[in-house]
Amino acid sequence: MALDPESFPPDGRWRLHFHAFLIRPRAGGAILIDAGIGDANAPAAEWAPTPGRMPENLKLLGVAPSDVDTVLLTHLHSDHVGWSVVNGRPCFPNARYVVPKADHDAVGKLNPRVRDEILAPLAATGQLDLIEGKVRLGPGITTVPTPGHTPGHTSALLESGDDAIVFSGDAVLNALQLVAPRVAYLLDDNPEAARAARLALLDQARLRGAWLATSHLTDPFLRV
Image 1 (cartoon, one colour):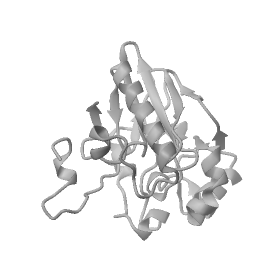
Image 2: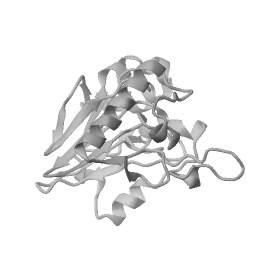
Image 3: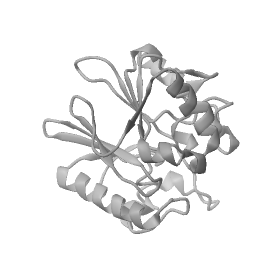
Image 4: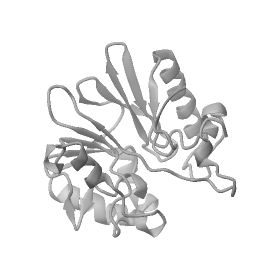
């Protein structure tokens, strides 16, 4: 596919990339959008190529784990939460972990390991922040409810002057859904709701003239 040829190599298999995003407001602090696939013992290790490289990448940017004050987990699939907790302790000790309440309530169905190894330690330290609807995360950044891929799937919108970025999470999973957004993904919890959320999110991005920041395409940033 011309929009993302590296994701569709000649062998016919779908090459999946894993991206998380760091926002550094001018006022200070740091916001993470998703927490990647984690280390070799993370829940995603059952199926994904762990370990990930988030700690090294943050270090290259001069960001220590203690600098992060907010972590938005767009949803509770294992490839988006992996670096939240390492060896039973929150990886970002000063952060509130923002989690969609509907996903929290359904996590036993989504992934019991995420419940036990990610959510339970965060709740024990008082860092778990359950949200519903549209919530301000920091200067210019708000959550955008996009349920369907999971019950509480949540995207985010960052605005600064005339510029904007939509962080889609898994509302958009591959390039095919950019040209044919009605196409469902096999693992969507509610395909009809996911389709409606994707169409609305892409419309919002186009109307706003925003960049789209995707979790699984080869190039994480693109115009739609």
